[in-house]
Amino acid sequence: MYNSADFIHYGVIASAVAINSISVGIGQGLTSCSALSAINRQASSRGDIMRVALIGMTLIETVALLALIIAILLLVNTSPEASNYFEYLAEIGIGCAISITGFIIGLASSIPAQAACHAVARQPLFTQRIFGFMLMTQVLIQTPIISALIVSLFIQGQASSATMLTDSLRLIASGLCVGVGSIGPAIGLSIFSHAAINGVGRNPKAYNKILSFTFVSEAIIETPIIFCLVIAVILLFIVQRPTTYTMIDGVIFIAAALCTGLGTLGAGISSGITGAAACSEIADNPDNHHLLSRTSMLAQGLIETIVIYSVVLSLLMLLFK
Amino acid sequence: MNSAELIETHQWNLFSIFGYKNPLLAINSEIVIHTWVIIGLLTVALTTVHYILHNTHLGRFILIQIVDFFVGLTKQSLGKFVFSHCVFAASLFIFIALCNTAPIIPWLDEPTRDINTALALGIISFIYIQINTIKLRGVGAYIKDFFKPFFIMLPLNILAKLSSIISISFRLFGNIFGGSIITKLYFTTIQISWIAQLIGIFSGINVILVLFFTLFEGLLQAFVFAMLTLTYLSIGAEDSH
Image 1 (cartoon, chains in turn blue, brown):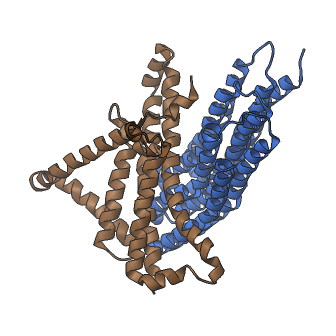
Image 2 (cartoon, rainbow over the protein chains, first blue to last red):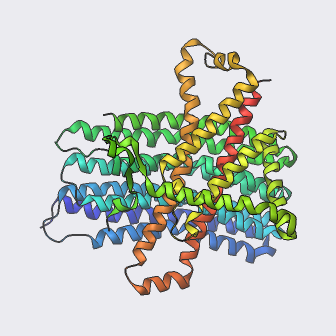
Image 3 (tube, one colour):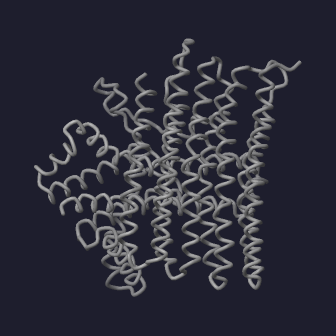
């Protein structure tokens, strides 16, 4: 006899794998598409382009593998008799964290691979450097999925002790915070890495300057993800668990999670666009990179202030409710 | 596995013998001891650096490269070389880098995975930046900045100034905390059987995890911390024109 709790449980498992597979499929398709057009342009470096595209696609697949691990963990933990409704409700949090993050990361991490194919076609003698650069940016783009994995494992550890609607809403909120919060920074990171790899492809002499700028700039762009992780951990461990059933607690949890999560959306994208503009300018004019990187970092620091406002508001909501 | 074990540290309530049981007075004893060990390592390095500089060729070359790196960093972010700023950023970088990469040494944890250490470093950097801005601009002009463009903007301006502490210290804390949680989860997972441990050792996954999360992330975050401190310093200096 199946009830609505089982429906939620198996729905979460299926959607975690399915949504991630969709995005990984689209990303790999786009990558091989640009590999083909790059080979069409520079047929002599066919082997290099194929190698770059294959390794890029393997890295994109990491997202689907992590979703598979979470799905198998959930499936193993299925209790055959007397399913706890609130435990399965809390698993919606795991679904949010893994599906939303995985969908956006699968698409975002394909963009450096696409840019790298075109860059190798443009600079065949510079393949090794472009290849290393693509690997580094792809690994940096995939950090949100790691934080989503941490939060999912914590949610799964606490889900069995959820006995109230507000308690499972707290777990859903922490998953939602990580999931929604990774959308903006992931888009920003992909815009930035596209511009950086394009810049290396246009002007290989600016490689060292673009590399040192990339380290700092990508760390600044992905800071909002870290803020979301902090809010999620506070929701999981530090917030006082509600002992009596009051609906307002659940509303506060969801509101605080959405406040930080949606607050990172604009800041991540615009910080990425700022860094991308600075990167292409450095590629055009490597001598001025001191001035350009300083101005870009100043602007990115100012953009980040907006996220901190929403983080402060979330903290006030959670800790002084 | 109890997931709360991963983030809890041993607390030592120093003033409880006098009857004060306030949780704000408690000390995270593990974190403090690990920080002392790192300070001890730095002291040993400090006492031997003079010998290395004068007696070994390779050591002298490496030291000169390190100093050149910091001088170049200061010039790049400030536009000119200022000795005190360079020394401040270099000492922040060396301390944070050693804190972040501490798990390489047996029985040591990262002190920066505690929010208190990260916040303390952020506050130190903030105070240094504010003192330098006041020195450059004068007290009157510094206070007048808070009332720009209108008088009403005062609370928003104060919040924007203070937000730099949160941004700089939470970035350090979150990255190191996430990395240490991931490595600990992995190593508690493979301890269930010796087959998993053998696979972990010989396939190289152990080494890759430590290389990425401890060395790469740790050095990168230390670099970003020093770089952002220098950038905030240059913002304060640019206002004076």
